[in-house]
Image: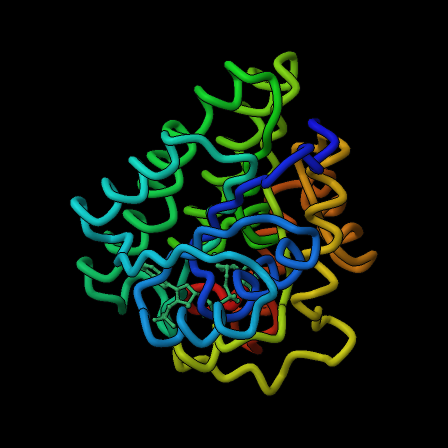
Length: 264
Ligand SMILES: NC(=O)c1ccc[n+]([C@@H]2O[C@H](COP(=O)([O-])OP(=O)(O)OC[C@H]3O[C@@H](n4cnc5c(N)ncnc54)[C@H](OP(=O)(O)O)[C@@H]3O)[C@@H](O)[C@H]2O)c1
């Protein structure tokens, strides 16, 4: 809702900035002249990303499934930001019945609790100032009943939409970014076999980051990059639940979208 280009030295904090979509946010925002606070659990990879950027970078190595480490990032968010990007996330290669409960609860700490805590810490100074934005990386899977992963992303979408309604009158945008399959290490590091996914469904991180920043600046609560995923999301909202469940059961036998912990 702010025009996204504050007058002097805007600051953005990005979680999961050492790879994939988070690193693409860092590149795009560095090009725009932002000062960056880059957060990830992999300090070495963070330094490599920061070293290639034309921007002043502050690095925070933090595992956002750990209470005390989220608290450090929360404190940094509360100091005042122009843009917060809650992006860190991971998937499991197995469905929830075959995944240890500890792995599922770690996912909900990262993809729900850390998003909630950082957003609530970042918003008050933005609301006070009357400018700023929060982008929360969800997924198109958040529109489908598919897995614990999908459920965390459904929460991100619902939370972001409700926060957007509250903050829009104060010129602060909260946006849920809902990518489909995106070319990053996400699936490889989770041990997912994605060989059955048709090429036309794959998105490039730089493309969806450009769309997300544009949608945030337009004050949109949802950013769904790519025409094929816009169609999928419209269908998810219009089709009867029983039909969607049937399609998911069928595609579950031949992994296409969102099987086994959620590829995207
Ligand atoms: N790629 C897709 O198809 C796709 C589609 C829809 C949505 N998304 C969402 O997009 C976001 C970014 O994913 P990506 O595709 O860019 O994946 P990625 O390349 O694996 O990047 C994710 C980054 O988050 C970090 N991270 C994971 N757990 C963390 C933790 N506990 N604390 C701090 N950092 C942590 C990862 O570190 P490690 O490398 O150490 O794990 C990695 O650097 C995620 O929220 C994901 O759910 C991805």
